[in-house]
Image 1 (cartoon, rainbow, N blue to C red):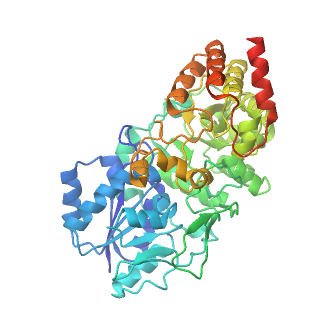
Image 2: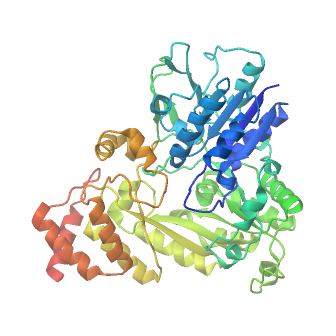
Image 3: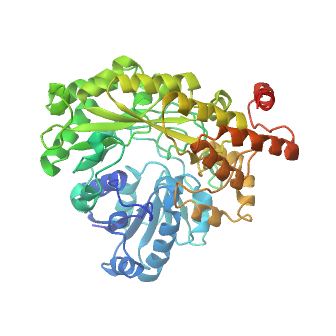
Length: 520
């Protein structure tokens, strides 16, 4: 049987390893179940030096060396592939995940060490690749969902592989192949009292997909949005559409998994990786989360402090608290109370902005009013809302930044906005690609390398502000300094005149900014 080395790359070098690699550990479980010889090296947990990476690659006569990750892992994957070609030249070098799926042709050209790229979901593709290796077959033309090189070095993009419909058939991740104690050491997250006092936190992927079309978001090829320009032409490329296929694990599958985590690892907190819990619940006609909450309680996972109506005491509390992500427009008191009663203690809300114009262009389906309402009713339900916000959107201008600061004041929240980043695979990357690359002298490799830290400033897609202006304006926003924001607006207008807006005709912004100048 084939020998495969799966490598989880370093995700953020500047931060501690906090999240267990769910997807690649599931792939390891699938390969192991098929009878192959699997090793999973978690570089994100171990943080190895280059000497150790090379030693791992030379440790066995690997048939396949597979790496996968998101776009921010580009630099590390690039380095590992270079070493793989040098120290394990006979191995088939394979890359998948969002990194490859977002731009398969570009990435295969940027990283010539890749032999096969897995486009989209790998659950069925990986076993087929491994079987062909076992059978010593080198013709990849019939394997769905890959991009590959022939003996002349020509690229071929095969037709897409359909998504797995029943995701309950997927095995649990191979946690026993991972250095779990490293992750448990970093269990605490400063989101809620319960997560901050957690000692053995683990992560769960309850669903794949999201029904919304946020233009800054990329669904990794798992949400039905991945299409091909022309399936009959293997020289074509992928495109990302507004099509959606939303898939959820059954409540029984998830609760049984969490019970296994509790019995095997003593887990005390669960983070749901899902893009958006409430959005997926809406896609299920509002049946999925209530059923999950009911079963969570029935199977004895409800935290003791919630059951007894007392304050959380990590020394006494048994049961499992949990948290995930939410959507402002879909939050309602009933479902939030059900979630809290089952142990949900925190929800991350992607508010993005409190500007009506910006939110409309983002395509998120929320408004400033739903943002504010969701925060209030989430607190009232006993769940801590974590407001996540960005700035530097194409349509941001002084009025939208002031809208945000005024909302923070009304709501009594502290926010340090991220900068809107046009990651490959997103609608905004494709729209602004020329503008993005112009900021890196036309060098796509340089742009991808710059994406290693998700919190830093990279390519600017804002129509009105430069990187320097955005950095300074964020500082003024965080300090609630509306006075100086308005003062700089006067200077900006003297230099540039009227603002530019990208997709939405919005005359109100210009009128409103003029009014703010008069009032100031």
